[in-house]
Each structure stands twice: as structure tokens, then as C-alpha cells.
Image (cartoon, rainbow, N blue to C red):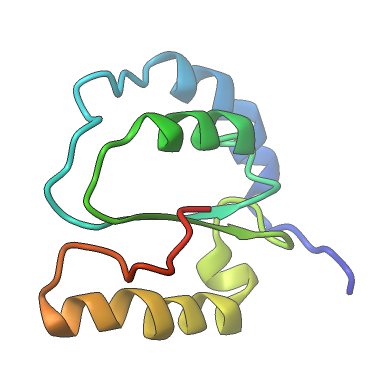
Length: 109
């Protein structure tokens, strides 16, 4: 499979250090609802390591981190079939039932 970045990747790469320097998420670590991170592995705006480290600090009744290995900042457009599958198979069931907790056999990563 050929990896293809979105056309705005250079702009994202140029602005990424500025955006991260201004980002302060210390007040956003505890949530009373499910939290899903759908992340592109090749994202220049929010590098994988930074996003994964923040994800590890989150406390939520259900949290899931889903990697899109062939995507940068826009997995919705770069891997649309997988993105749709995650929404239908993982997010929608929680939304339909109104539950806040993950199934017992769920892994967070």
C-alpha cells in the first residue's frame, strides 16, 4: 500500500512547532464520558508520541486510541473506510446505548 499525505502537509509541518508551543492541556485530563483519539501516525501537527503521551494521562470511563498508519492529520479523508468502520463499530454502539464505559474485553490502545 502506498502512503500518500494530504496536500496541506507542508503547511501543517511548517506551523506544527508554533501550535504545540501554545497548547496547554493540563486542565483536560479527567472526563466523565468516553474519549476516542483517532490519530494519524504521520501527523506533523500533533506528532504520534505527543498525542499518545497525552492519551496516557487521561482518566475516563472508556478511552480508546486508534492509529491510522497511512494517515497524517486527516485520517477521515486519508483512510475513510477505516475511519467509518471505527465510528460504526466502536463509537456508535456507545452512543446508541448511552453507556459511558467500554466493554470489559476492550483495550485502550
